[in-house]
Length: 212
Image (cartoon, rainbow, N blue to C red):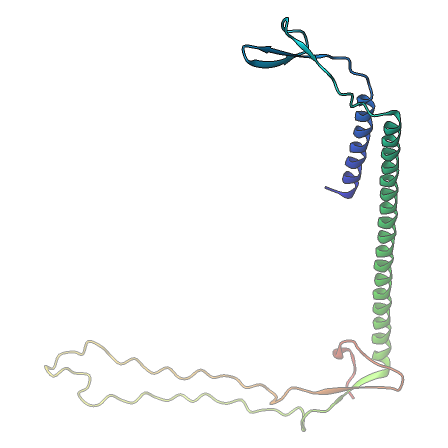
């Protein structure tokens, strides 16, 4: 249940209380009779025999002063509920405005930083370059290894025959040569250092900078 629904329900309860007090102020003229027959006592709104006796009624009707005080309390509580609801709405509106302002400032700051990065990258391409600082000499070609194919050893004499001069059921498969793994053309990766003129910095991709 939302706070607004809670406040509305409370106002409705207060209004119902005021109406109930107003209805209770109406005079009641209904008479109640007590009858005793055969050892049993019953009550009725009309005489139930010759031995019926009227029951004295207690007047619980609130006085005019009590009714006025109840109406004033109900009005004061309803006004308090209305003030609380108004204050809640104002506070919620102020919080929404503050959050919107924070989001707008963050978005503007992100746009400024992005524009600054673009400017720095564009200026850095003109005023910065890369200097190789890796191992020397570079590039250094590396010889490509040649494959070495080794012949499998020949079986011993008589190894392919059974003792009974019958054919051997299994024949030794040829040994496959080891796969050749090509080595990289360079034994190391290039290493560069970005050098810029005084007052400039570069934060963009290194591939855009020339090598000197």
